[in-house]
Length: 453
Image 1 (cartoon, helix red, strand yellow):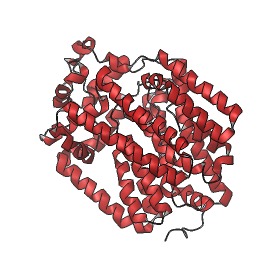
Image 2 (tube, one colour):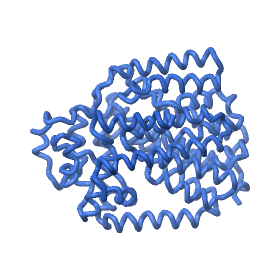
Image 3 (cartoon, helix red, strand yellow):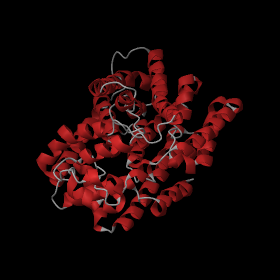
Image 4 (cartoon, one colour):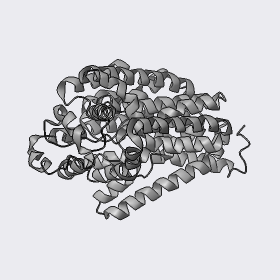
């Protein structure tokens, strides 16, 4: 399975702009090492010319400074060598995730391997995304908590910092509910902040929080592959301000809910692993920015739920199946059609047995057929936008040119199949969150944190 996923990633190496997301990370880290600002249009757009064909569109790298520091050593290599090495790192992360999640869930190896490869590897390898590192850290943290090692859990959970939208609720809930992990978490966060300042300086770090993150969320409000609530509402006709306020409010509500239900879920299943698994699911609800690769963060909880007696809960079953594959039609799902259909069948057979499994397998194949309608937005990175690019200020945020690009091409593939796939992606975490809330209600609201030692 892992070899197959690796080949899918390597296919991008020869047939399309190589690892578009990693290319942006690589250029951003290189720019930061030279003392320039990696969040601006130049010189990152100039570094990305081989990717964009000289269109002048900058593919942003909206990453905190400590992530640039992580990627920085790879900038010492030529890009193609760095890309191959990065792919190997991601493959190793996926392999370790399979091992850890099998131990965490106790489910059969084929089930765990299929789910991890289909949800985690399939959505990240071809793009060079960071999600496999975060999922690995999340799984390792959950296993450490099960064995009553909260400090080790905190160190493992630090890997989620590469996906800040997942890290914030996970680390916050861990800090609140695991007293012995607090000093370790504080040290990790201070270290990350110090690395960010050393990498970018104070001004760029403030700019990242105050300008880059809001600008990047707004730049993708037209993007048909956005799974956050705010851009989906905007694309349905809701005004921008109201859509993003709704997305932010739902994120805050999900965070508060995760803090509230975590102790009860831990008691319901007598498993401290849920201290980090619960917030990892609620982190994917609502929001202003969410790509399909981040949805893999819900997989550890989905596997753990269906191995700890929650399999009888209908919402847990649905979330288990939906979290196992990327339902949104894309060029990736076309090439992974047999694997995704097999994964859906196996997940469904493990929960509802043969009749439903056959139907779910057909649904998986239908997804792949719908993917044939997809028009890859990467193909729009062409000289056709060159006249517009001439007006981008080199001192503007990279999101300015990206927003123009998204406005022109971000709705490619906006078919009924795309919308159906998007809602199925969104419903996966929602179903798992519902199963967690149901478990919490079954034991009542927590009166104390007696399980926190």
